[in-house]
Image (cartoon, rainbow, N blue to C red; front, side, top):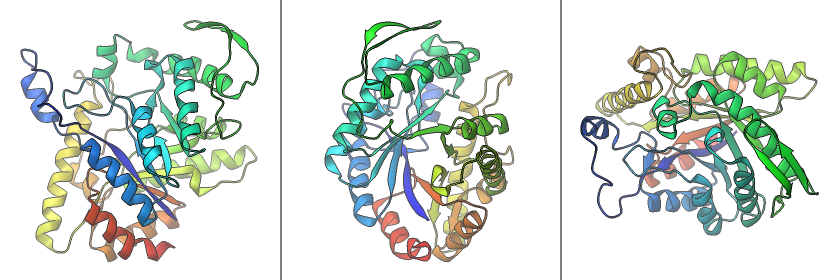
Length: 349
């Protein structure tokens, strides 16, 4: 098995950001500290330390307009991390394609791949937070159409060695070629964030690697993995466990009191995430939302326990076909990383 990190960061430079608009203060208070974030410099230092300890990768999120200075330009931050590291894989989890110019995105991704000497994993997705779409003035209902249109162009841009023209519903380009060409050929690996059965099957059929969220229970995660594996094999390909990255929250505890505190924090973060992933009128609920029973979601979907207990949880995932786990950086301090590397990772070497 291999292990990586997953999450983001919040900048703490020059105060706490712009003043909230009237009526926004309560929202900002609730979401001022992201559930997958810590400081930018801490994240960079953590990535360097993760490489030293033998972690395989670090994947960064993309979010906008939170009011808490979260990562909005993940490829920019990965460029800096590429200069500080030499072996660890650098991933996006994910770039929300409907918000970007696809040709500029292809150029930026290729640049990171060059500067990292071929270490980029390009995670892409349609987006899931209604408030972000609203603030970009892009209808959430158009997310799939915009994604499909842009991804086709991004693939073409990253693989074409000759100039080409492109005309589609939203994008028009004449006589272009993406520079620089990526190191990895035909292009950096594409990873797709998906959760609904049809989306998971489509990811397999279109030869994406799969990113599974950290909020589903172990049972649901293994069901999604089963759907993906069956679709891969139905297409005549061999299933590789390293093509599925399973994100998980983690807390190493030593006694019952620490366990309850960790469960309480996890339930609070799940509640916040569920609100972010749901429209106010509940006409839309993302697959990123957890089981509504927050305690069940926390106990049966998070790596909370002693090192021995966490080894047992990971063995359950491994026995279900999981070979690659991404630990949520909200909980991954340098001390936890070292404990995980010394007391848990050797059981899966």
